[in-house]
Length: 521
Image (tube, rainbow, N blue to C red; front, side, top):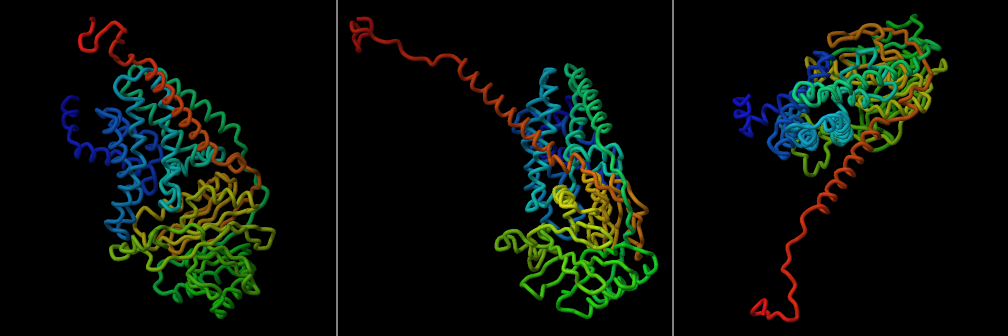
């Protein structure tokens, strides 16, 4: 142990180890999908920050670990952003610096059982604040939230319907903290084990209490995935060919992927007529996605557009949350040089102003999301509140074929379905496409990145209101209250210490009989 501690005295070696420790949780996400690993993946990082000689060094351990975590979960962006991804990871990794400081504050040296018990509440709450801040669209969005690693675990999906992905992240961090305490703090092992038992009991009660989605109908939705195609017209021809294979299969809706149409339909009536003909032939509306300069207003938009048997239906959703650098460059006047070192957007896309629920006939109402908007739990929750029967994600991960990105993206739809109690269809151009039921369970096979096909899914419908839809992000609000109470407690403690400190030293007062030059005379 002394040898290890001596080896870690080098700041650079310690930072490198922290970055590696922070990267470990990526193995819990697709493609590895070692979901169980999430419950111990933070332990090395926690033990390292706990052993820091000072609070400042613990903050650096948190920062370095955050850098490693962000770089690992976004490693597939390296071919697009090149060196810029390291800068982004370094900047956003600073969000974990306070978390590292808190680890040492409550678990450092020889913590009392009380401090160990408080850590089981404070450290998960602090982690949620990090996820909340980095979930802001301008900072890249909530890709890689720790709770998202549990997308294929049925009990976890039930809990997601209670508190969303936030509740899952909180519980995962709490288990990691308890494991670290059991390993390294003998005096606090009993409270740690007791807290684990209490957490297990509470989550089991929530699991049993959470209402299960009651299926009250079914629809048939077809996903059209053309595969990698060069040229917008060639892709359109393949999508048209695949859609014609759906004739006679009694589908209620046909869904194409993101950027499936590279021309504004208002400016290309011939393409609109071809899609309307497909709608008449299949007996279903076709939801396409247009990535083009609009003919009726300035700028480039990404839009979900519904086409029926008579042409454009009037339903259109313009993407609201754009991908930083991929679809726009923040502060382009300052960061426009990013286009010279990677595949950053040459021209900013324009944003939509509101979410849209579309009526596609057959009594079916759909709520479209585009690309990484499926990572935002609040957007799918609002669509469910607005009456959507089915959530639809249109995506294109063509740039990231062969990486972990397509699988990670497809897995997010399972969480959105479980949170809202609504089925979700994730349709892509090049895979992975997937469909999930109202409980988050997978329906049918994934369409992998090697598939060029059209497939029909029987999708069960449910219309109950989940606790998450009803109460929103209450785990985040609870975490804020915990941290507010922590700040108040620390403030009162500091005030008491100041008041109980030694009296300031002052010279004794002179009497009227004393001489300033000769004290005592």
